[in-house]
Length: 171
Image (cartoon, rainbow, N blue to C red):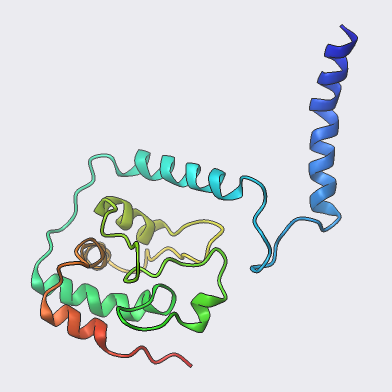
């Protein structure tokens, strides 16, 4: 019985007190260059995936047309490229300084394998504790145009490719 009470006492008082002191005394990693908390990536990923799954069930968007993909390319350049990059161009200084690092959507693993509803949700809501803002000020049509651009990044029409190939002017 004593062992049970000791375990209960440790679980209810000592562990939360240790966590509080760890944060309060400044040991928590808060700089962008600091390593993440233990299990931080896993917990954030689990929460994000669960929320997106719950919120996007049955969601369908606007179809991808050559015109909408070109519009999506222009919107992407204006709103996303500074963090997420462009095909054949190096990562921007802003993207290099972010934590967590934003995925370079046209290099390596992008979002072409993600369900479009997931990308649309991320554009609409942003992602907490990252640099990903919510783009609620854009219209639904504009967010779907960017979503379809990313979902079809491996098979874009020439007009969209030309827009994305233009150098990004970052100072």
